[in-house]
Length: 421
Image (cartoon, rainbow, N blue to C red; front, top):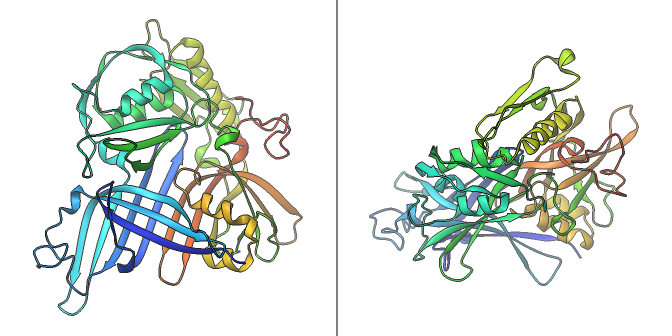
């Protein structure tokens, strides 16, 4: 058998969106995540409009649609001959509508952003609450609560809100003081996320009971998924693919030094009573100079936690490494090279919830060099879909720096190499 891949695109309300798959001419999904950064997702879809059905005011089926009140729901549909597996790849909200029409041929390009980016624009926010767990602060910050201005697009529902899933199991206390932020994005980016060195991104929008639920997940503290949430993707060159491994080609494969993310000094400051700035310098600061990051308005809960966060950043990111940076895989490669056992690896790689911030092992042999296998982490991806092919371009970063020590793991459990926290 072979692994087959198709796509499904729906636009509309979250409960009953309309299937526009038959109109797709091309589609591009871009998603990125990183430590202490709000993850971002965008999607651009070009639809055939030769019948004028999408033209505003043109009298067609969708001529009176309020496009900016609609959600976009992109899924992959994969199988190994029977029994489709449908996997959410992108969920978001329409933010742009571009019509091209020369009187003979017409297209519409719809652009959507993830729901957290859209809702995070809500401005002038007064917060407070004292000491709570990180999970509680994240859930509270994402919820629509009476008296607070956060608003999500309803997408056809009477209400909407957000929810947080912790993938790492680390849940430190934070201290939320009374202060006003410029926006909810400002709360997440400057105060909440760096209080636990979280990796924080929007996933799906669903209706668990009543109301649209914008789901967000993260890996606070140890920056590593628990076993229950983890998958390790193994990539090998075309022609040597066996078992659950996935192929990649020489085109699009690159390696680079991680000097752009080097940190030799970290400054962390909380807002609890008596807080002082935790400043940690790497022993390599005299070699590489001052490569500084500062988070000086965080919700970190205690001085000890503040010190730990600063130490964590310097310990992880103060040394230079040369690792894979990008690789490309296509649905044609998967169909031609992969065993059926790799099916779950493929659809998990495409998943918005399971494909990002996962461990990766890349094996290759450079010119005149010995074969090597290097641990990495998926920090971003671009998925380009046309009628001919789906191309997935992955952005990779060092697995040694961005994952914690895993006992008895050959690639992520090396003493004096992998991080204990």
